[in-house]
Amino acid sequence: RDKKLSEVINKKSETSDGHPFILRANIEFPEELEHLRALKASGIGLLRTESIYMEKEHFEDIAMQKEFYRTIMKETGSDPVIMRLFDAGGDKLFDDNKKEQNPFLGWRGIRLLLDNRKLLREQLEAILTIAGEFPGRIKILVPMVTVLEELTEVKEEIRSVQERLQSEGKDIDREVPVGIMVEVPSVALKIDKFTEMVDFVSIGTNDLTQYVLAVDRGNELIADIYNQRHPAVWELIAKVADSAVRYNKQVTVCGELASDPVSAACMLGMGINDLSMAPGKLAGVKHLLIDRSLDEMKQLAEKVLDCGTTQEVNNLFKSWSER
Ligand code: PEP
Ligand code: MG
Image (tube, rainbow, N blue to C red; front, side, top):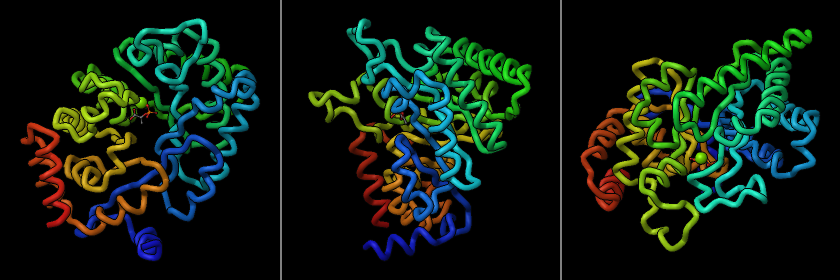
C-alpha cells in the first residue's frame, strides 16, 4: 500500500477528466514540515499559530514569533502559506483567571484578539514583517469571525500596522491577502456580505459542525451526534462555495471533512477545488480524486443536498465510492 500511495503522490493533481485541484497541508508544529516536500503538498493551507502562543515565552517575544514564521517560509520553497491568527480560547485556555461556562461559545479567536490589541498587533507585525521577506507567499486568515464588524475591525488593524511599519521604513508586502474562516453559521448564512470584503474564505468544518448541530466537538457523551457529514453542514458548504464562485474568490476547506476522500470529491463537485488537510491524509484523498471525473462529483454534490440524515449521506457516499 505504501508503494501505491507514493505513486499517487507523483501523479498530476487532476480529476480523471483533467480538472485540476489543489491539496495543501494543515500544520501546527515545525517538526511536521519535514515530510511535506515528499508529499508534494501545494504549501500550507492552514498554519495553526496557537501553539507558539501556548508556549508563553515564545509569543511574548516578537522576535521569536518572527523566527517561527521565517522557519515555516524557508521550509516551504516557493509555495503559499496561509497563516491563521491565534485561535486561542475555546478548549485552548487563554487566561486562567477567566474561566467560562461555555468556552466554545465564549471568548475565542478574533473575539479574544480584538480585546487584546497588543497581542493582535504584535502578531500582525510579526506576520507582515515576514511577508515582506517572502513577498507574495503569505496570506492572513482570521479565525472565529461571527459578525461583519469583526472583519472591518481586523482589516483596519492590519492597515494600521502596515502603515506604521512602512513609516518606520520596513519592507512589507502591502498586498497580503486577507481571508476568514467560515466556521460560525451566521457567516455561512450571510456569506455574500463577507465574501465581498475578503480575498478568500476557508471553511472550517470542525467548528462549523459543532455550531450547526449544537454539539461540543470534544464531548464524548454526544460524540455520536457530532458528524461532519450531516446534511445541514453540506448545505452550508454548498452555499459558501456558490458565493465564492460568484464573487470569483478563492475558497478552501481546511476542516477534517476535507480529508475524508468521498467528501473531498463532493466538495470538488460543489466547485471547491482547493483543500487543506493533515499531511498524513493527502495521499488517500488524492488517490480517489484522480480516479473519478468532475461530472461524477457534481452528481454526487447534487444528491447530497437531497439527503435528510447523516445515514443517507453515508449510504450515498458508500455506493458512490463503490461505483
Ligand atoms: C475548523 O474549525 O474546522 C478548523 C480547521 O479549525 P480548528 O480545528 O483549528 O478549530
Ligand atoms: Mg476552528
